Length: 193
Image (cartoon, rainbow, N blue to C red; front, side, top):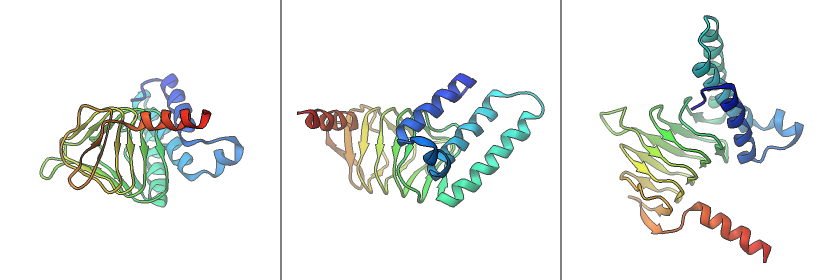
């Protein structure tokens, strides 16, 4: 969670790197980057400012965030994602405000991360360095460990707290004991040889 101006700047830097945003053109015309900058500004103003007029600025950024989210198909509340968020595509993404998702999350289109039926506070907790493929549905009081890849169209309704794995299917089950970081380092290693 952003609790200082230094945190705010670090979140922006890591988000920009995760999205691969470079140059002036991307800064002004990359719609997802504009959305994420607004998300982080809304978090900063909501969490860090207590003077009387700051509430108005926080509400303004949340209003702008909602408009940009509607344009892109995102329903992503503030204070859910850690730094290094990478939203791969515009399209339907719905996240419950009670979810907690760690650093360096890669998120694709048609993802729904929500609460269980009858208890809107019972929402997923997802660790760092997770990859969430297109069409994934995660709901309920679910705990997903760090470095977990979730395959396309998976339905996750139970916890996988161990991390360092890949899960897929309906309902989701472990299909590999290698997570996204191992696949990334493997592909980098292969390209050097």
